[in-house]
Length: 195
Image (cartoon, rainbow, N blue to C red; front, side, top):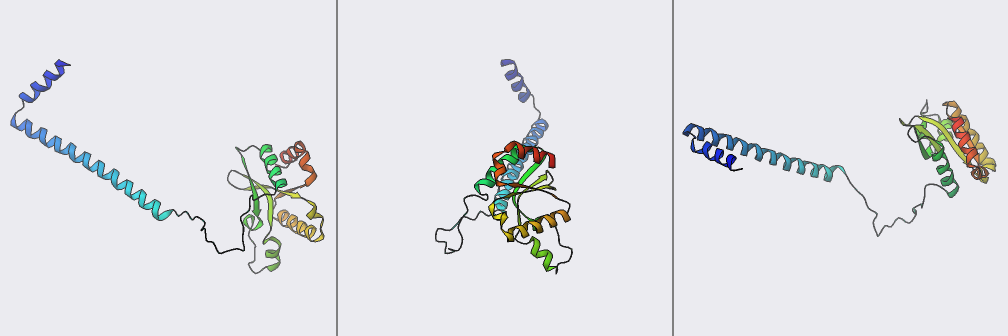
């Protein structure tokens, strides 16, 4: 350690006036580089802080909300739908597929003619219980859970219309009766076969 200390002292003692000038210029250059580097860090910090303030907005509910026509759902899915969701999720390879609940039919297709009211009527306000997509969100399989309401005539008409629309775009549909939830292995097998 003393050897290094002695070498440093000898170096400074033997400096010529030109050497001292070069050393001062080098120290000034290093100091300026450090100052510019610190300035750049500070500038970047304020830039991202400004972006965060102007580009992201979190809206929290107001305590004195006067809108009484709506209330929050506890879940997007009914208890039977939630059970089926878990069965479907355990049936597929999540590295290759996504399960998306409550998918609007409008998000799956386009209508050829905008003023085609009959076509709009068949898909507007209609949702699939579940949609399986690949990792690029290409629809692969539609799944419906049919409870007792699907035995009603207006629901049967709606189901036929949904089946026709899905068939028209080439998307497979699997329908499970509510009682099928008691047989998860059958659901697994059916989904794997349909995929």
